[in-house]
Amino acid sequence: MDDLKTLEEVEIPSLKGKVSEEEWKIRVDLAAAYRLVAHYGWDDLIFTHLSARIPGPEHHFLLNPYNLMFEEVTASSLVKVDTNGNAVEPTPFITNPAGFTIHSAIHMAREDAHAVMHLHTPHGQAVSAHADGLLPLTQTAMLIREDTAFHDYEGVAVDLDERERLVEHLGTKNLMILRNHGTLAVGPSVGECFVRLYYMERACQAQIMALSAGENVNNPPQGAPEVAAEQGAVGITLAAKFLAWPALLRKAYRLDPSFAS
Image 1: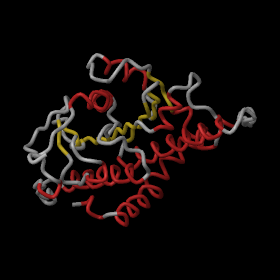
Image 2: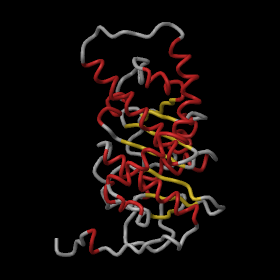
Image 3: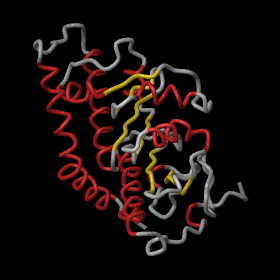
Image 4: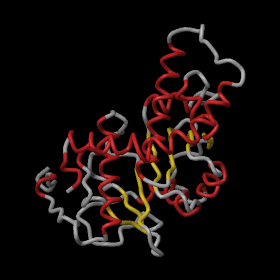
């Protein structure tokens, strides 16, 4: 234990002013997303990832240090990695290249996939184990159900060959249930990606609670899920850009402003 440094003993020089304003904003947003995931209890120890693309021809991305809890992540501690998840600049932290397989596949295939978030929550995993997947039992589910894709489990996602199938199954949709595994969201910004993920996690939680309450579940009238899906396609984007994400960012600052350091 003597050779293990505490977080306070690891020097994390601030990158504010040392990277472009655009990159710094992405760093702050992504660090806030990590803190919010921890706040909502969606984290899985140090596992799973939230990633964001840095604009430019280099194809670089931001990823969490593998040895930090999500509530410890800061804008400056995020590691800049290449398409294989390897750090491209000196860092006191380690990364998990194998864990970047899912993210890199989607980032590289989808120009609009500036942010990719993947979770292993109990509710998300429970729905991922259901043969019928996400059911139209709640408004939340109906808003996102038509934008949700599915990918069959192939083992721990370390095989680079799986990238092609992940991309194929996701297609143009922005949410995915990785069967027997977890949930995933894609977005043109960190904020929009997080809000989509929030809807997915809430829908999964409500589904498990509804089904556990008994078999007498009320199904929506015919045509209602389709109407809700059309509304969700526009509403979630507007909420993320102008309403929900700005409010969530303020919440992150109230919880602990150190994420923006």
